[in-house]
Image (cartoon, rainbow, N blue to C red; front, side, top):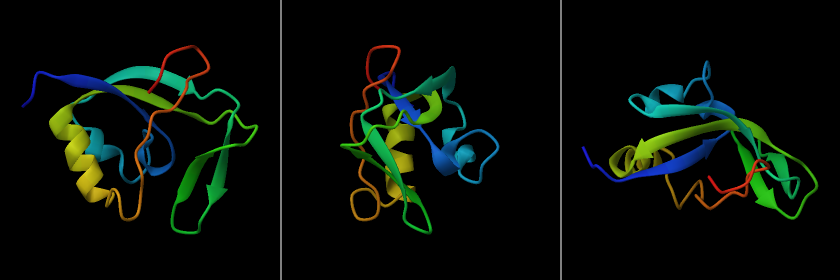
Length: 96
């Protein structure tokens, strides 16, 4: 396991109680979080997309994850083919 960690904002199927939450096993939960109201959450059928340029504050959860866990999530989510990971501005300040 890597000692380096990062904050990861999650929404949709990665949320607690949802199908892909197990990918966050071992991550440190930092609590509920929401984005600044500059995004749109678009339903693409099989998954949702969080995109810049809207007026919505998206609710989710914030975790402290090691870089190996983040890389594992990226592989399982097929980043960058199916999903794109980016920096999200949080309502309470900072990024996730």
